[in-house]
Amino acid sequence: MFIGEVILPVLIVGILFIGLPWIIFHYITKWKTAATITTEDENLLDELNDMARRLDDRLCSIERILTAENPGWRSVACDPLDRLEDRSDAAFDAATGITNQPVRIRK
Image 1: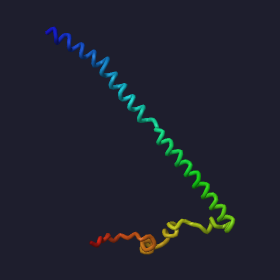
Image 2: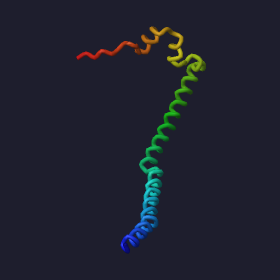
Image 3: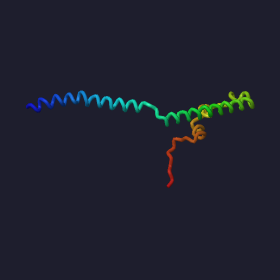
Image 4: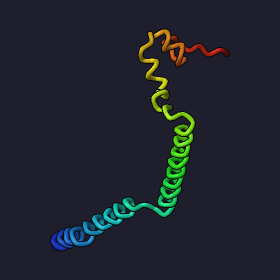
């Protein structure tokens, strides 16, 4: 009976003061490391940002060239899908290549 009276309180105190804080601090550490961005990710984001900036500069250059050649090019340019909305389904299928027919695979 003496062993049960001593072991149970020691086990409970050990779990409360050692086991529980260890589990909590373990998962806090995992949470903090998972929330940070790695240097590899930072480099990738910097590279993508530079690429987006260069593409934006190219687009601005193309728009300046088009405006110099034809000042009204924006009113002439349109989205090809906008033109297809007014057409019938058959014309849309022919223009886009999308049909409701099943695809047959030849062997």
